[in-house]
Structures are given as structure tokens and as C-alpha cells.
Image (tube, rainbow, N blue to C red):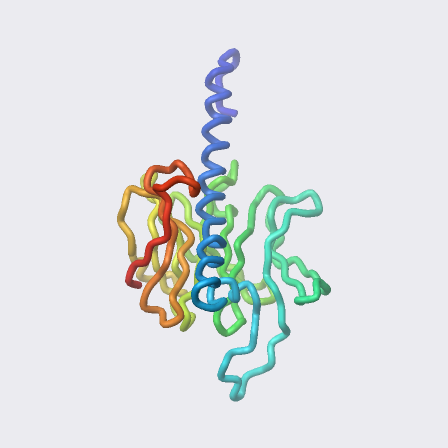
Length: 232
């Protein structure tokens, strides 16, 4: 810790700040699941299905894809890594292999099943409480950073046509929803509110994005927390 010797209050303050920061980032990243579950209950499984890799609807000339589930797990004395496994739980393979104290989490398949977007703290450096969005091929190769210029970014969500990714991004202490091209160009802020916006999920037609908003930061069990929709 960066506290001066004999200054326990400063040291405790730094620990508290880092702990709160980690909770905030985790909240932004894990918020996507709640929205996906809600979307799945009211309009099919278009949110949660992105955890599964499936063959595209139009398979003309396409190579059949192995059915896989992408997930993050903490094992082997490491922080979170991205893994894939078959739907029956066999053939578990780790795809990310960064420093042991880095968190790679919230993997989501591209619509064509060839690329995985995920959140990672690897870009920010110790204490690894802030992250960015990364892309990698289905076998874990070709990892590249997608977001730059944010204090932190998480909760990636592919557009139905695979050309864009929505995510929760923090700038100057405020979390909003952004959309960016898969080549990293043209990031656009689609919400601009002092509330805590997270967990973006695309509508099947790509015209709108559902997300979670916590107006006063008191948590999802209060009347000030709800699901909103914005034009993409």
C-alpha cells in the first residue's frame, strides 16, 4: 500500500477504496446476467443463448461448429480465466492464461461462433480492479484489446449482426452504455445519465438495447433500480 509508515488510517482508507472499486466493477460486469435472464423470460433466450456457441441459422457452405459453452472460473490458484466446455460438462479447456492476479470474465460468443468477447483487468495494471473489453478467437488465440480511453469497461454484448459490441463504460466516475465497432472504431455513448448503467443486451432486431440502471447507487433491491431500453 502507498501509505506512510505509522499512518494506519491512510492504509485502511486505501484498502476500503480498492475494495469498493472492485465491488463497483464487478457489479458493472455481472449486471449483464440479470438483464439477460429477464430478456430470456420475456422474449426467448436471445440474451443467455450467447453463452452457447451454435451453428448459424444459414449453414450454407459453413463448417459445423462444435457445441461449446464459454464461462469464467477461478481455479488452480488463479483469479478468473475464460474456459470452454461441452454442454455435458466434458472437454473443459482454459482459453486465457494471463498473470495469475488478472481477471478474465464474462465471455460472450459472436453470432457466428468464431470470436469471443470478454472483460479483462489485464490492461489496467495492479491492483487489477479496472478492466477493458477484449476479443479472441474461439481457440483463445489472437487476443486483442477493443476499448481504450475508459477508466473501466465491462459487460460486452454482441449486436445480432456481429458488427458491434455494446458495453458498460466508466468515464470520470460515471457508468454509461456505449456501442463500438468490432474493429475498435467509432465508440458511441448511447446513455448519458448520472445513474449507474450496466448490463446491455441487444434486441433481436438490433434496433434497441435493454440495460440496467441504478439511479442512486443503492443497489438492485431498491425502487431506484430498474430495466430501461434505449435506441441502438
